[in-house]
Amino acid sequence: MFEALDNIRKSEFFKNVATLISGTTLAQAFSVLIYLVLSKIYTEEDFGVFGLYMNILNITIIFSTAKYELAILLPKSEKEAVNLLGLSGLISVTVSMLLLILVIFFNGPVSGWLGSGEISAWLYYIPLSTLLVGLFTAFRNYSNREKRYKLIAGANIGQSLGNSLMKLGLGLLIAGAAGLIFGVIFGQLIGFLVFFTIHFRTNRFKTGWLKFSEMRRLGKQYSLFPRYNMWQGLVNNLSGALPVFMLSSYFSTATAGIYTFGYMILYRPVNLVANAFYQVMFQRFSERKNREEPLLPEVKMFLWRSLQVLVIPFIVFGIFAPEIFGFLFGEKWIEAGRYAQIILPWIFMVSLVMPLSFIPDLYKKQRVAMIIDIIKLVARLAGLAIGVVTENVYIGLALYSGLSVLSIGYSLLWYIRLMKRHE
Image 1: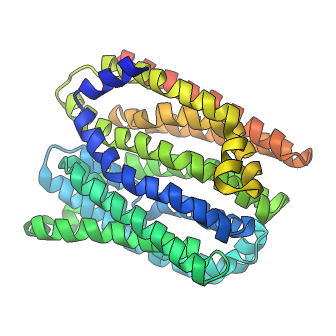
Image 2: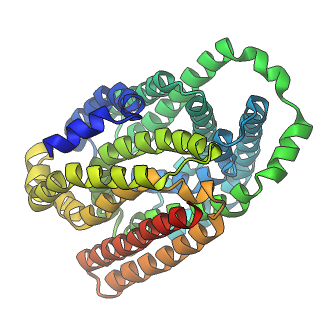
């Protein structure tokens, strides 16, 4: 294990990955410590409403840029990248306005379907969150293109600290899920402002490059992203949101809250590391492919080293998760530890494969990736449905996790075959 860590430290792109991870590790550590307090001042029902909000947001943000933010890294021309950034921002504003209209007209039916009247008032904040996340991701990808990893780390820190401090402050003052949701919105705003302020200072002259005709041309040139990536993202995020939606609808908001708490404690550190590798590897591999250099050897090395590092910590946590949750957060969250124990194999596969999920984009195979995710959605839905029919949360989550492992494992094998075929 220590030899693997030393090998990773010496790898080419480690410096950029380390910049992203180290820049946010302190903020993430603070966030986890904050949860020691949040677990005492918020109830399971509060986390249930918060889980619903976040999973609805995870679906709406897919439309916020029509996935054109992914295309920002691909063109050789800087002017084209700037216009793709502008196109992403323009789409974000338009989508958020349309979402507000939808919320006004369909608030009641959505709240009823989710089985939570408390979520009703918070649906009106979804358009604002969608706009902020869309702009944040667009600027983050443009910063990634420029290899401004310190800026990305700074924006992540601002977002994480703003989020955590607001949750803590409001949680001590206001009852209910308000602190959790306003904390997220405040963090999103801080993250966006960090990017906007720095880029406005250093790249203001590039605004003259923005032309609607050029955005329209690039929109057609990279139409695969809204045609496939956007719908694939929708399917994938809906697939990830199924446990919260179904637990809230068929069991209780409190059950959904327990799952949300366990999932967030597990997923946040995994997402931190996996997303850092994803950003650096996407930028690096885009350049390598443009130079027609092989990608597969580096991917194999990444997978082998990741396995060496991750296996033991995941096994240990998998064995003792309920005890760890009970010790850190109190007895009422032991059940969240049991849920985390069940979904741990799925989270392990995510940590291994998510950093490579850009590979279909490099080879313009988004359609196949979308089909694989549709199959995964159907399989996950079936697994959870069995849990609902048997009235057993554990069975539903176990089937959901096991089927997720199989589908993500298949995706990894397909990525490898894809690179072999092209190289």
